[in-house]
Image (cartoon, rainbow, N blue to C red; front, top):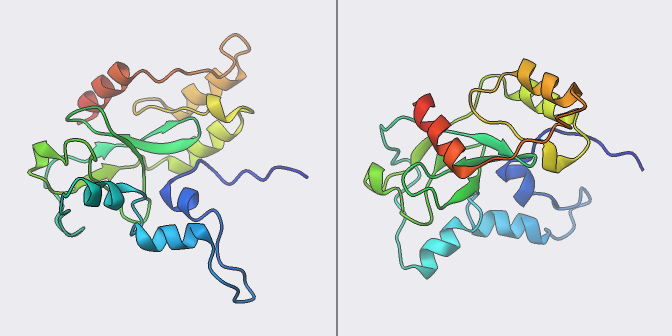
Length: 174
């Protein structure tokens, strides 16, 4: 069976991998997860276990948005404050709450997430790489750079995402 490439994975795709059948059958586990975790994966479960009451998703900090990146074929966001929490980017909301420091620098409010305007072109360039582990993109990299890196037989499309490099690029992008 051929593999169909639909672009890099982001939160909605990951947690909605299985949906209710078209014939009206019972919802799948993924659909129930989506409902229970209110579109932000296990974050609400982590907050409940830590006895942290999250603010309404409408309370968004005026702080600059956090740039998203692609790591192993997944759109992700890294906490710019503590650097210890990485989560899927939710294209429906484009907001973020760290499950470690609870957005300490933003007074506990949600932070906006910045996704590049060339998202589809970036996903297309990364889709040319055979191994999902080689599908990585950092803010500042152009589509031309991605294509050149993929075609160059010496690079094999491999890009290791180091947290220190990512944090410094995120600070430069602000």
